[in-house]
Image 1: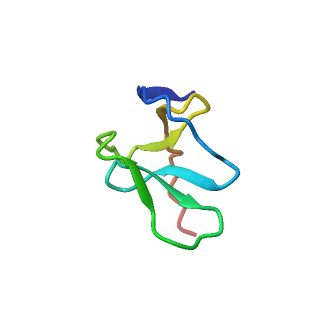
Image 2: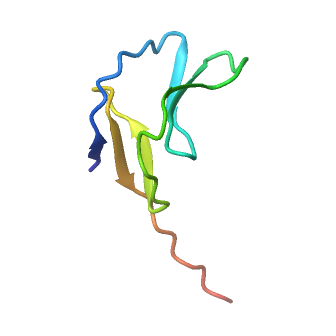
Length: 76
């Protein structure tokens, strides 16, 4: 289950843009065509932790969920 990290209430246009949280914790968007630069909407929205995946939820807020843990392969 995901937990909300920061309430932003962003209005989004999913017909034209993809929304994401980049490596520095900024909320950004990019056109669906893939052309052009990323446009940062909120600078330093969250302090990232590599044990979680960060995303924008349906309410326009930043949320996170734990990453899956891989088990090491057995040596044969």
